[in-house]
Length: 432
Image (cartoon, rainbow, N blue to C red; front, side, top):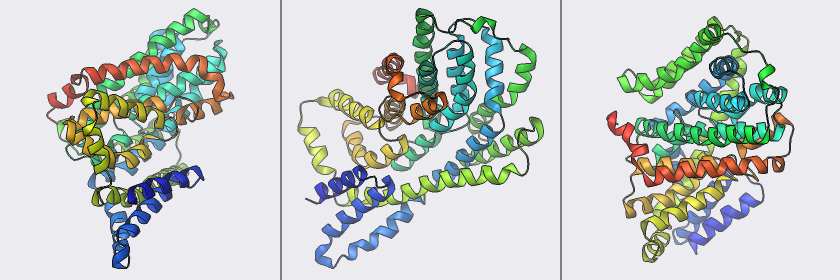
């Protein structure tokens, strides 16, 4: 009854439009109150303690800094310079602008950890350029929304930081390294249908007439943005700094590029940048604090035990259970962002992970790939909503294009599921 109350209250509050953090906290408090009714509800004293415990995690120190990194590089004009360099490399022919959009989104994914922010940065530059080249606006929005989904796979990833907090044995450096190859594989999986659809449907008829940026000048201007992922990942691998310290170094580097190199950021802009990053970080941290109550209720009151026993008694087996969980994650990912999904479901999924002896790093990457698919799959795809707003189209207009992108992304996810070494080879090689 307690478990049913917990999840029923959470679902009802979510459907009523209550913010997800408040819904998680309310459901957890109701479960604690019911479990301790005979003790005059003294168990409710655990609520504030677990709110604090939910955010008193060392890896979370990196979260607000990586959010700030994304804000800084967004204002520094890095996206436009990366686009110019990519265009100088691939030239002008039908299908090349979608390739550039996906490639630039992947590079920006190595700087920022937010998919919607990535979609906004890339879309602000690429959607107008693709429109001038003759690409339909719904197609452009589909490409940008799907490309931004690679952001939560390619490090630094806010979703991976949250995952590491809730799953012992999955460190932030290991997850960052594990997401690299699957992120690149996902990007390649998107490029194939994007280029094929462009040429098959005759999109980009005016692309050859657009000017091609000079190679060396565009390389020089884009080099500062290209160096950021190398600095972040290379510094962690070399042992120069931890993930938290890497975030701080990236902020200082981004500010130096924006203020002194590109001069696209003024001193008066810093307040707005810091405020934006602080607001985003505060929302995430508040949700995580309230989710701490939810996690405490699930773990301490043993609410996950019936689910684990039911799964163990089923005839699905390890593979069947994994496919069922990934299918559920895909559906839920259409409505919620990756961080929220981890906060809600990891207290339930962790016992299953232990039961079936799944590698926590591999499972984290696989689950994140499924969540990434949901970010550009209608009806409530967060990345696609951003790109559609920039393109001025309705989300249902993207369905003929998004379907192909989803299919190829799913194929990339299945490859990682069948061959775990795609995710585990790099962290093991680097000693994480």
